[in-house]
Length: 400
Image (cartoon, rainbow, N blue to C red; front, side, top):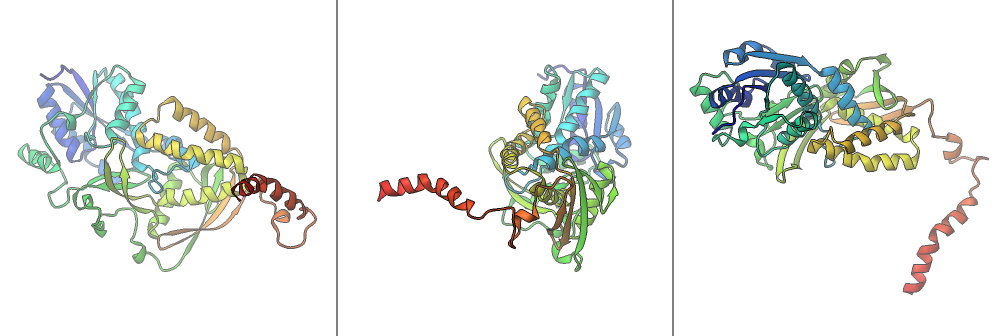
């Protein structure tokens, strides 16, 4: 027997899954359903949502503009951390989930709702990301996860349900892709992409041109940073949202940022995902280049050791866990002198660093030069080498 729920706040996108869920929740629990859609930069997908939600039975729809918070507090934190999951994934979906779930809990409090619901499947990472955030912020909230409750086995079943109940959706049997778009990236899963040997169809991509079809001329872009945070493009100071939009535009035109990954989900299975992340791909390369001249070697290595753990924590859904907060504070401390500019060259899918400069650069041309200098005594290197070789020589003597 279904647990009694009076009012639920559903994280609603208007896509196949949540459109069916809205109808199903009312049918299953007989409760009031308040829909909530977070604007994290999905653009035209928000058009007509209010009419669609109410027509499907929602009592109201909240559309919350979270773009500034998403980029400033989440995306920039990942840039400062150089966070990359399993070597290539820049965490576009993972970073959006905690900001979405946080506002959902705030709306549930405002509405006096006793439950929240999400559209994540019982196989994926998003269920974990949403629910860890819910419980971290509102430990006694009831959570409804329809994919773990209903009898439907896949998206083909949902398409049939939508057709049966006259629920308007855009997914079809021919293109049953699961797509997640925000200001940072677009991700694609499902359909033909479930075959890891199959190349992604060219017509699925939304943010980037195919590298072979991109512009034939390279383009230079200068990115400015202050304390690790991107603040300008080509000398023009911009807000967080505008800056990321501009780098998405220019990077997408050059085919930058496509990734095809078979990743290890937190729940244990492998999953194939295809991603487009043009702007942050540029920022990752530029940020690393700036750090190379502004960060002390050992501090950089300590931060890099945190980068992997930080990326895993974000991917797994532990944004509001104490260890992630500690890592954010530590990473912020490493960025105090990461201020300056980096020039990158974009060409057919590539981001090539072409220059970097900083007011507090640790790079000393007088030390690094191959020409004659009076700063560095090369004879000093002999003792340095012999001391470092001492344990190696001792081992070699024993082995001999």
